Structure formats: structure tokens, C-alpha cells
Image (tube, rainbow, N blue to C red; front, side):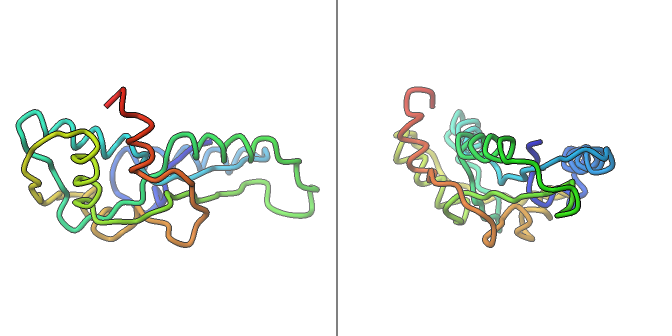
Length: 165
């Protein structure tokens, strides 16, 4: 199952729903693996693109990101699905793995990379993000520096996705 890092530590309704789904898997008695990933590169690109329509590139004040490529997340999901099942007494039947992108930076740094790759002009504007999601980001709960990392950087993903940006 694909989920979101630290979803169980957020009060955001969407993230709480992800945590609840994880819990159902855990209680199922089946052997399950949850891969919790950081936000995908495309989320940042979508946010920057949406603001650029009015020549504003939104940057959440105090937020760092560690985006991962969907391809890296898919590879980890496939790898875990194909692993041999552990001997019943050898370990837990429900596991949670974290996956983050290869780089962690201030959101503004990613915005500038996006602008260079797309050629889109616009003013970077640091905006506060109130509520549960703002708190989640400001506290760095969207980061997993100690976890396994994907390989594709944001810049690499932008280069590979140039036709669809």
C-alpha cells in the first residue's frame, strides 16, 4: 500500500484518512507492507504552475520538501511486493517503510529550479499556510532524512518531464 510519511502525525483530514487505511491493513492479520513516501515531484510542479498563471510562484513560508519521483516509489512498491514472505515467527506481519527523495531543500529552491526548467517568469511569494497542513510542513513531518532515498532529483524529473510541464 502506498501512503504518506508521518500521515499518522497530522491532523489534516486527508492524511488522517491515509493513517486509518494503514490501520485497517495492520489489523487484517494479513502480511502487509505500507510504503510511506514523501510528496511527489509533480505536487511541487503543480503548485508552482497554478500560481504562475497570475505570475506568482507560491512558496510556503518555513516549508522544506524532500520530493520523490513516482517511478522511485513504484520501484519500492514492486520490490516489496516481490519479496519472499518472512517465516511466520520471524517478524511482524505488518511493516511500514519510509521513502524520501534524494534531496531536501527549502521550497523556494525547488521553485527556482522549476522556473529555470520551464522558463516561466513570476515572482516568488512566501505565503503562510495555516492549519493542520501548515503545521505538518513547518514541523518538517514531510521529511524523512533517515529513510531510504529514491534516485531521481527534482531537476532530473523536470528534465524527463519537460514535454508535460
